[in-house]
Length: 113
Length: 260
Image (cartoon, rainbow over all chains, first blue to last red; front, top):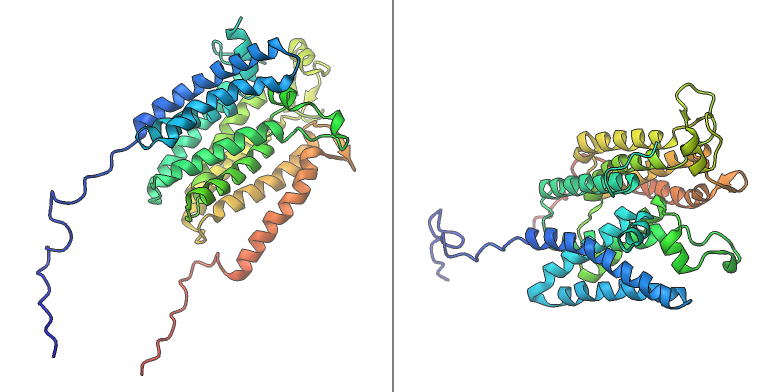
């Protein structure tokens, strides 16, 4: 005959108050601020691409600018400490590409004089 | 015809407002459904990457002879943007992201109302800046002034179908149906997006007849040819799911337990 201990009284299940795992901090700040910065990154990297485009007749050289611009958020996203900043930058980068659409090029050339 | 707000072009302004509206709806719906997993952020990122790339490249392949198509750089910088290409890219991006991070929950129910409202707002920018549609004898046609007509390459003063207004009404109505009715009724996870996309595909196919896009084959435009292939796939999926009984709201019959 096996002995089973009596069940604990109600209210004692689960972790005691104040002893559970701490709540996970949100990442809204990193995502929002990162998105705004990512939007700026599109314009800067696009401007770099257009400058490179003026140096050579090879049109594909333009993509070097945006690809360089993508390098920073990808590096940040790969590191656990800066992951959410990188994700935010990437969201802002691609969101701006969608929002500006055809206006992206016009805006870059306007800002670049 | 072409209102601007500071340095921001009209089209971009309304697309931006549409994106903000879509983000708000997505967040509210994700919280309501309890899908606040951090991995959802990666899924959204996948949608944005796919949408941004395919909306630019979706209109690239226009000629069978590849030499007649624009170079990738020309297409990226000057080419048309395609809503249909963006939707396909976003769908692909979501699936790739979910596969990469191992996220199994369905997310279509989060995207459906968000995309509908975002499109309703974003299309206002198209209404203000793009060719409205084909000539119409109706009284509600849009008549372009000389400046706008010259920019769009059409004759001024002719009443044109407000095809983008039709789309705005469609997406606004779709959002209301999704938000106030369908999301509480469809029991199969993720399927509201299938319903929405299928309905939009059918509607878009019809509205293309008055959009004014180039007719390329058999009286059909490029978007219509694309939809001719994709809409039947969506409708077949809905029919298949319905046949399996996934849309029935009654709970499954209890499984008898054999007692020995």
